[in-house]
Image (cartoon, rainbow, N blue to C red; front, side, top):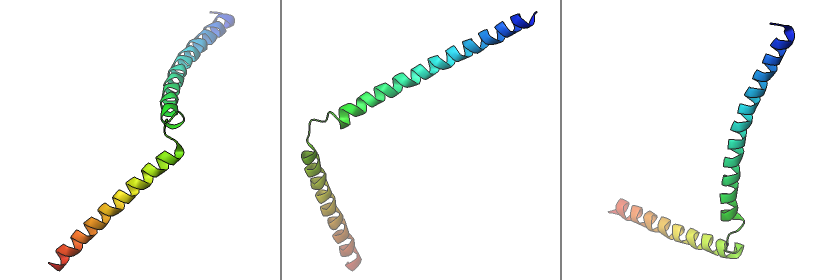
Length: 81
């Protein structure tokens, strides 16, 4: 085999490897684009306004605090009993 033939073989092998790597990277890119699109729908295209989401969070925090107080009171009652 001549040096040119060996070089051509090496380059062909490199191209094959690079083509395979490109395919893998394209698959990862497609997956990332799908994930980004799903997040966009949830975060950017949300139908609720910021104020509505904030009010909902504050309401949930209030409920959690009430629950925390109830648990604390129950624990105190059990300690005194």
